[in-house]
Length: 368
Length: 83
Ligand code: SF4
Image (cartoon, rainbow over all chains, first blue to last red; front, top):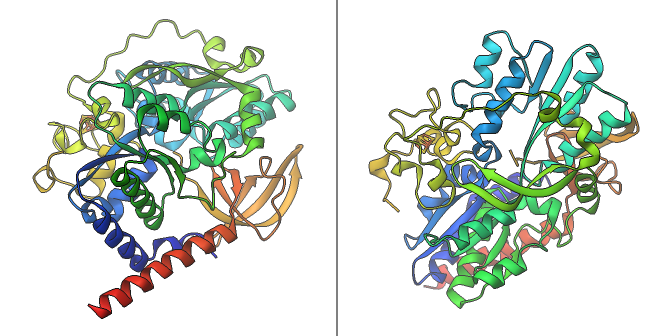
């Protein structure tokens, strides 16, 4: 068992697609939460192989895309300071702030370094005791335990030159916000598999019951995605609204307790602004008061940042499943990965980037 | 961002008080934090995200899923053949 090739078996995907075709009798709008799933779907072309009754809309599960402009501008201000080594996941570098991006800050001499793990940022802090090392701690519940671990490790090592700029988002609050909107058209969810690996499934039954929507925990390979869609379609056809786990090899109902404890030792829930969407109650994490010493926002007074969002970007509506990238007038013309107007065109998980990368052009796509 | 990849643990050690391990991703080896999977053993597969193992993969569950799907595929084939 390699846990990859087996779940890309084209024959089995076709079997599931045939079953989906057999099950469906009327239109359904299903949202995949996670941007990783969006990429999996667009890359494999699964959305085009589905019967036309099923419309997949793309959710807000792209941490880079929903990081508030204000936070990006703060990051840029901190990264510009000469005493700072600013460390970040690579995805963040080209995300446009109001006037610049981290990549440009680096080109102008800022010490911005890409890390693939938060513990790498701690190592850099240890190796550079005379510099201030800041880690841009973004991500969902999947990433929060690892980011929390970096704070605990810095504390254990007694590092005083390490801090984190926190922009953590949590999925359930966003699902509630999407479902509670008067404009909502989502009738079923593919829940984000790796968020559930950490958190388990306990947050979902109340959402499924309150809003009458099926929620199916779904993985990322074509087989996983097709299986999640089939479970969701069957529930919708049968009028059920239950929580199902179609990613059992990686997800248990209780999730990973150790990872949850690490997270809880460092972060606490808070309201949070989502770029393009607005503030959602209880949908974020911030440092607990007893970890305030690691808070980059307190350590570096970057003052009031004046944000300025692109006026044409409709990524907020895309992230809520109201529109698709091809509905954006700037898509592929004014806005491309080389000249992004919004974060959804830059991030490896952004819906606009996925559409662009896999060559989706407006006239080919039926408007949703 | 939530990309997480399965890999096989080839070795486990302690580094500055943290449970770490070497994980093989189809030939590419990386240092991975195993702090959240204290039960994980050499030879098992973990799902790894930003250098942090999120869980040990459940092999039995994976096999059952694939078996079920193959049965579905076979059933579909024999149905197709009899049409
Ligand atoms: S195509 Fe560009 S401008 Fe349009 S929604 Fe996507 S990121 Fe924003």
